[in-house]
Amino acid sequence: MVRKKSNRQQHMDLTFSPSATDAILSAAQIRALRDALDGRLIALCFGSGVDSTAMMVALRVAGVRPHVITFADTGGEKPETLAHLDRMQAVLALWGWPPIDVVRTKTLPSTGYTTLLGNCLANETLPSLAFGMSSCSLKWKAHCQDQFLMGARSGPNARPEHAVWVEAKAAGQKVVKLIGYDCSKADTRRAKRVADVESPFDYVYPLQLLGWVRSDCVSAIARFLGVDMVPIKSACFFCPASKHWELYWLAAMHPELFEQALHMERVALTGRHSRFDAVEFGGKSWEEMVATSDRFPSTKTTVGLGRSFAWNQWARVNGVVDAEFRVVRARREEFLLLAKTLGGADNAFDARSCSEIAESEVEAQQLRELEEAFA
Image 1: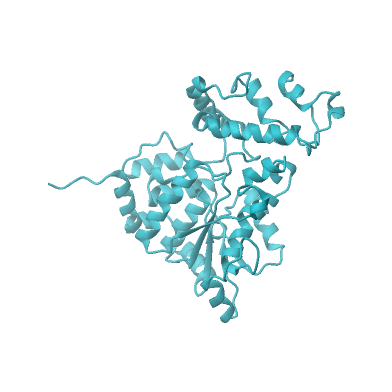
Image 2: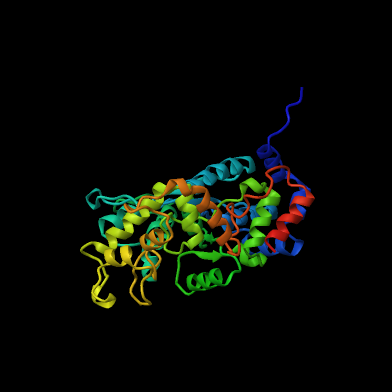
């Protein structure tokens, strides 16, 4: 008796199917990747999201293999992101690629915290993105990946130089760092900011070489790995860049994480280091504004995780939480529907947007429907 393969096994088989690869990259795109990367020592930064997964797919199709792959765990990743990381470890083993090295920023025992969430709680603050900065990403993502390669002489992150870094120095080369920035306006700006900074690395953005935007990334993952391998957007569950539909999704899927984010915000805006000035808001405290007002007036002051809005206030006004600011779990299905409706026109294009697509063999008709959905 021949046992029928599972969808996942069938999808894995597509990683070696010529017909699957032909539809993903043109000959010109393959040349572009090879011209940029052949003969170089490559370090791939994997975020366990759509863009970095699509970047891996493109490199696989082009026959370009990275020498080291890193993922920075801030301690605030969503469970789905970590689950996708595990799934991709299995894919890379099939490909014969190096495994993903999970790296973390280590802190001194005296600091009292080991994660970005703990950092914010201990210092009564919000992630720096809430204040228009990016130091949280630099400290908890970029620096620890750099130290994994370059080594560190002292401190809690002390470690020897990676073999790839040693080899590059001996050859008088720079390691090429691959980042999954696509051709969206936001990612194009991010890439330019990186290019403006003097760095020990050379940076290459494969998705920009291919001319891919988010929808192209989703389509490539679905064709090559299967629809069920399209991940959700990778970001901390308390990310200040989260949109309203993502807050509904988080409250529905992970109410305990949403409540942790609300607690972080409350600690930061009411603690001794709070930047909130009640004078600016008619003498009302932050708690009064959250409890009695529908919104904060227009201001340059950061009033919560949403910068211009507080997650606590938004959750109360929209009935996401009760009087004790606990998620109303009985409304889960309603929250999911709101997330789907509000996120319909969003550009996230991730697993949450693909939930309606059948998880069976990726046949021609399904691919056409997928392309139309993300056109």
